[in-house]
Length: 196
Image 1 (tube, rainbow, N blue to C red):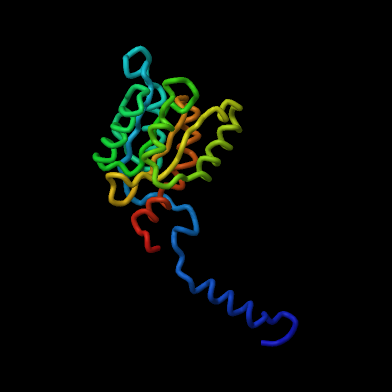
Image 2: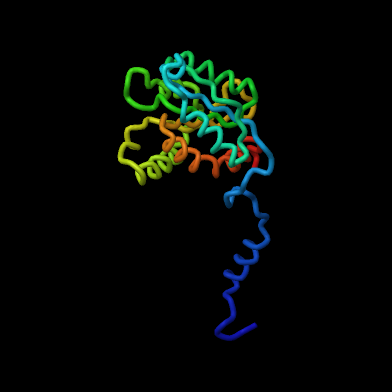
């Protein structure tokens, strides 16, 4: 074909190469095709002592279920580093591939979730943390007070587990799940198929 509308040879070759490449879910967001086990850990000394009702944990379980991440009832633990780490280890031993903590991300003495998780996280997902922050700031300037982390835990897990911290508010939980859950299938695919 010749004339003013004829494609450049290099452009045509590049276009045909792009069409022939197999599509993978790494190029786009894809939903989970099967249910995946998860876990929710509420970190609150007052909730653990029965002084206050856990309102954010059940919201986390419900929100995750919408994305086929199925968690039993939340584990409720006090704000102590060793106890939080033990709860995470228990969730991993139980087969969870996604663990969401709620509470304990602020700046009080009992807000120890980041300190508990930092030593467990092998790969920090800084950009997802930023996405959560930006979403939270759309709703409240107080979102900037959270020290929540997101990352991959490999200890005691052959393939890796996604660990995300959410603030103890129901809104903070919803913001966190709204950002991380759509990305989780792609994270899981990479964790389970490192040669992709």
